Length: 239
Image 1 (spheres, helix red, strand yellow):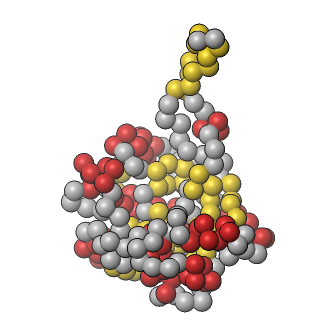
Image 2 (cartoon, rainbow, N blue to C red; image 1 turned 120 degrees about the horizontal axis):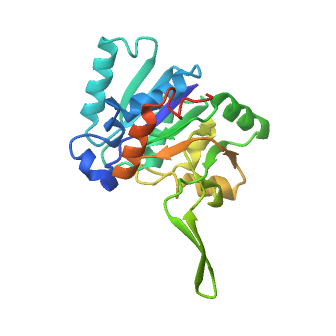
Image 3 (cartoon, rainbow, N blue to C red; image 1 turned 90 degrees about the vertical axis):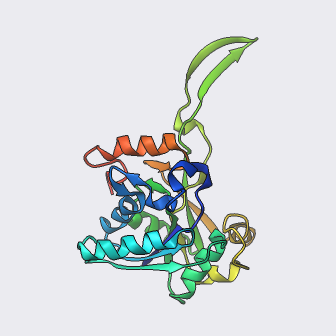
């Protein structure tokens, strides 16, 4: 099964790092984030990748070529596909799916790491028979919690990740028919195809209770850098 990695956005929320490169190329422990992401899949036996590029696509193109030269990608089939500068996530997924028509694909965002079990995800997807599966995750805890009774603070502490609701964590499994739910290049996957799939009861959620961390801010980048020194880092633990 081929893995689509969405890597074409502008990365405006972490513009300090993305002025000269796409967000998936931001360095985490001297390696691009996308290098760490690819390792999640290769460790679990997936070796075919389509990187949907856009913003400063030449940076990813050059990196792929350099990694082939130094043999990191020697056992992989990896393709960087220019999906357009202004194309939204739905359009990027559609363009990639059109290159592998008739195949089931796994698609995920190029700016988040997680120790999702791909075999378990696929098993769940095949068990329900629907067209699409999204991996549901708990958002990282960012704020302290106040328990207040009659205006008096009874407890102050960090919010637990388990206290939050479920959100879209990427790591989608998509059947070929999902292509029919994407209307245009300019349509985000999250506000176009996904709601249509929900309306037709064709979207299921695989609940992931392990590690998941996006990189939308400098603080989150710093958190990932700290984690990257673990052996193994949490996104490769138990996968």
